[in-house]
Each structure stands twice: as C-alpha cells, then as structure tokens.
Length: 286
Image (tube, one colour):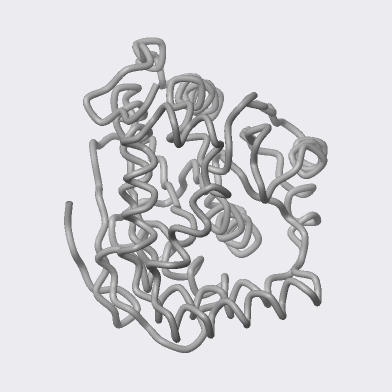
C-alpha cells in the first residue's frame, strides 16, 4: 500500500511483487482497489508484479470535482506506470474499469501485452444513457451515496451471491457507500462521453480474456460474444449464476481464467502460473 502524487493529485495504490511481468488492474464504479484483493493474491502467486490504483475520485485518491473523462483516467494510469518504471502490462478492468482499459489500449496500444475485460461492453453511450448518467450524477451530489448503494446492490450482485456470500455483499455495499459523491458524479459525466471501442478491440492482437456472468444486469451475452469476436486472440468465460462482480462472486473460476491469460501473455517466463490453486489469504467468497 502506498500513496504518491501524479498529474497533480494524491493517488492511493498497491504495488505487489516484482519482476518483468506486470498486471495492472482497474476497478469499476463506484468501487475502489479493494475489489481486486483475490486477484492480487492469485497473480502474485503466479509470479507477477501487480499494480492496483484507486482511480481519481475513488478510494484513497484525491477527489477532482466536475467531469473526468475516460482519457483522463487512462492518462493517469500511464503516468502511474511511468512512475513505477513499467513499460508494458497486462491490463484488466471491470465495468467502467473495463472501458478505461479499452481507452488505455486506444491511446497506448504498444504498452498492452494482454487484456482482461470483465462485466463491461465497448459501445459508445446512447443518448438515453447520457441523460441517465447526468441525472444520476446530480442525484448523488444531492442525496449522497447511502440510498443509491442499497438500491443498486441487487444489480451489482446476483441474488444468490447476496444470500450465500454475505462478506462479498458487505464489501460491495461498503465500497459504494464510501465513494465520494463528487468523484462518482465526475466519472458519470465523463463516462457519458465515451466513444465506441469496437475498432480499438478489433485492432489488438494480444491475448485477451472476457469474463461475464449470466446474471449481470449491465452486460449481456451478446456484449460478451461481441467483445470475444472483435478480439483476435481471446477467451470468453461465461459464469452461470454470477452477477456484475464475477471476480468476487466466483473468484476461483475468475482467477483460473486470469492465470491462463497471464501464462499466454508471458509463456516463456511464467512457469509459476501452474502453482495457483484457487485459494488465497485475500480470497472473499467461494
């Protein structure tokens, strides 16, 4: 755990392990880097260095009111990597984090060695979506996060996950409650302006992984298959009975797929990947 200044703001992040192979994980909205604990442990056990920042406006990173577009988030990630003297990475993200990853790949394709896209989609925002995100931004500023967090929890997790995995439900609810409404509102406004990333995905030749749950309220099977088809060297993992947080709802299956991606991204160096057994001291849930 560390804090540093980049692009004029204080940033909280984890940098675990060392060596030539680096995984960069990008959290979704309205969460923070703690959502990746099971994956930090799995990737570290597989011999990878793992860098996991809090995005601006989230977690321990400074809040910047107004509007934060996805290219700003991507630039922050590139600056973070420069500060840690990392040239190229396998980069992964969930939901909004996945769209930030796609923006990073659009801006910095030469720095991407592999791609993980979880519970996300590449399409540009619709006109209705723009209106909804703008309205939600105003609501969060007016009402704060408590009511929104309780309302949206059943969309973030499958109903059986809420019932069977109370620690996961509590973590997701806590992350949402703790997010600063100014940071969340700025991201919502910026995300509404995102372009389509379909051309970006079709141009990539690196190993890729798409993970989506069958109970995801935001990402459809069609979205998942579209991303798989656009990416030239990709695997689609479809998780039955899992909602919008597959990394927490089904960490063993998610981590197994992640380690396969890491092995494909560095096959000559990653003999340690076979050591991953599905469990870790950071694991939450089944």
